[in-house]
Amino acid sequence: MNDENVHLPMPMTSEGMVDARQASYALRLPYYWFSDRSMRSAKRIPHYLLGGLVRFRMSELTTWAQSESAQPGIKEAE
Image (cartoon, rainbow, N blue to C red):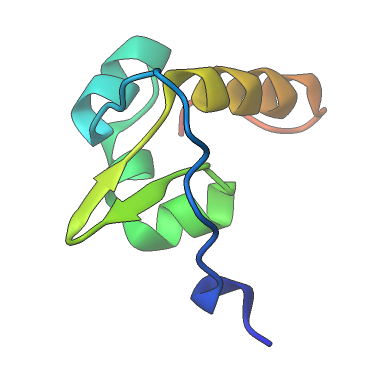
């Protein structure tokens, strides 16, 4: 089974969602990390596909960024 084909239901929360540009600006990371499918996969960035749109939850991105910066050998911006 391929993990890329698994679509989990979105959790029901009142938190709004942001697009790639907003996520990039808020986390001060390169825009292409969020906009490019292969980079999202390589960096394991949590995201949701809504029709043809890619959206992110800031709480999940914040948790992801903290876990990435805690791992040795990973640069924040390339």
